[in-house]
Length: 252
Image 1 (cartoon, rainbow, N blue to C red):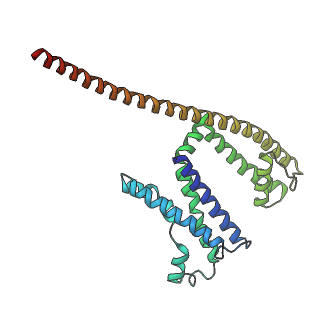
Image 2 (image 1 turned 45 degrees about the vertical axis):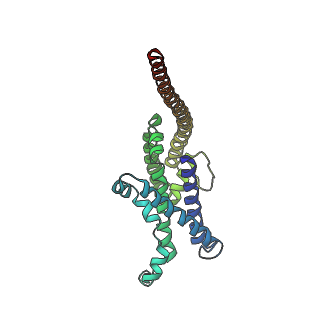
Image 3 (image 1 turned 90 degrees about the vertical axis):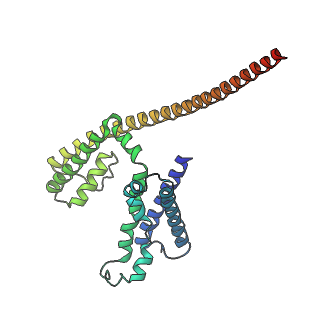
């Protein structure tokens, strides 16, 4: 039940972010029907999620400290900006872009809910170090490619991502020896990274499945232990009643 609920929250947060991106792109207007109703419903769900968790939390202060991002995600910024007329202060900056930044706070809420799972995954096969190495290689290769091929750093980083993922769109390609050398390194890194990632995902979900089965077995064992305790209590009560009846018969 808890997993289903967390999955629902994650889906709603993702929908909210997608709506915000479509809004900032001018494809839709999030303040018009039916998108405004969808966004308001998602916001109400986040409000319920935060305050219900606060209500049932044993340590309110700890819950507050560890759910700051969740609290920021439910602040009604549209109403606050309109009420205090902050739009006059930020008239040089698009208000939609400011609100979009705050909407992405919901991503931090997702990370908070998945924090334990993410830590477990990153520890599996020590893949966290592979992420560090790949990130460093991407930055270094992008910088080298940008200098050797005389392209912008943004285009160089896009090329590095396309190369390391083994997609290779071909819209940007190296022409110098240094650029091709960097591309070869990224290709080898990409193949190794995908293989390691696949192996880690398989091991992670296998261990999670085993943990789930172990929890179910322990639940059944605890249930049987409780039932055995109840049966032992009833048997003791019956034995006492039998002894009492025998004593009464002996007196007669």
